[in-house]
Image 1 (spheres, rainbow, N blue to C red):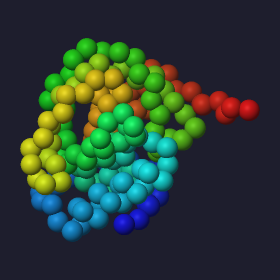
Image 2: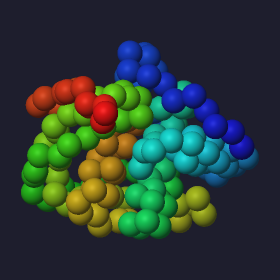
Image 3: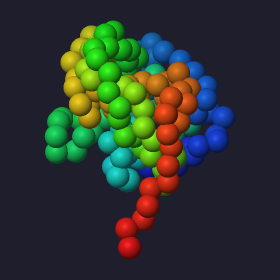
Length: 156
């Protein structure tokens, strides 16, 4: 559909909680296309609907060559296993990264675009991406959880 502007750190919409999606309709299908177009326009690996100004519980993750893209509606983490420090960045806070404690492994459940129940068991980068994007749905940014935030140094 369209590349949407990604809301930036400080925008109040990013701090608000999203609403559950009740059904797949034309509006939702348009939102999904906007999420995909907006993510692929940049270098990120995940995007949540609030980042493009839509307060609905929808996330899109694509680790590019590592896994198939994942679109998840009304996602929730149902189990967290272990903990580790994670380096994270965010399309809504460009130029910065932070150190965040995240689970080593998660089990995530939600609905597919076909409105089927789906569940993912994820480790490593995918687990971190799920946690990061699902946090966005509750108005939580990685900066709220970071032990340390720093500016990314530009390569000369």
